[in-house]
Image 1: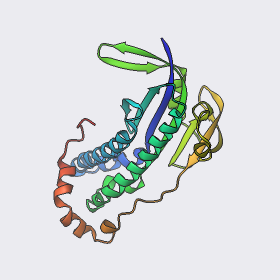
Image 2 (image 1 turned 90 degrees about the horizontal axis):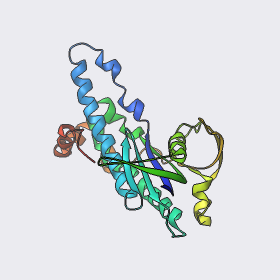
Image 3 (image 1 turned 180 degrees about the horizontal axis):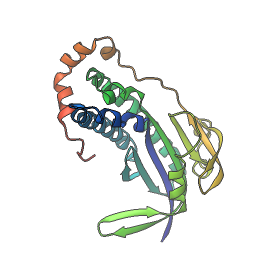
Image 4 (image 1 turned 90 degrees about the vertical axis):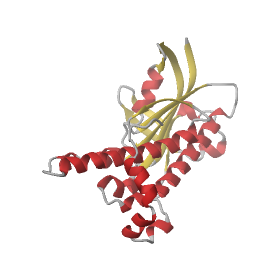
Length: 242
């Protein structure tokens, strides 16, 4: 049965550069060992950042699945006139949670490995749409599909130079209140298989996360002070469930 609802994808910008370690793997002796260790650090940092975003959005929308460095959510349309505004509020909370977590993770720069030292460059972008979908159930798995679900995913493939933004369709924004509509400016994007699509864009420029307590200390002092917390991060399995 066809249903109508809202779709949202929260995606971490800078993920590809963050985990590119192929050059290190080619180095002799300790190269492969170090690369594997660095990959573990990268997976844990990404996992924690995504988890903070999920916790902010999940009370409002259902998490369907994790897609690498992204999380895909949906919710069925209901009779509430402010449903889209509540999703915007969840998006705001997600941005705040991501920035807060990124600041908390500044201590990992004491590690010195490439992923940890570059974690400050990770940002959050969110795309959202409203449209039709069908639900498919296979054993214990539930999947939603349809042209509007595809469009939502394709919105991430755009020409926007910023790495920290919200991009929504006019269908999503139709019922937003005036204040929320004013957060956006028109943006026309050529989307694969959908041609030119008129969208609404809200860009952010939060800069690097700042944690004065951490940044004013030396790397050595950070490592000593945060030793127990640091150990929990580096030794924890990157395959843990969110």
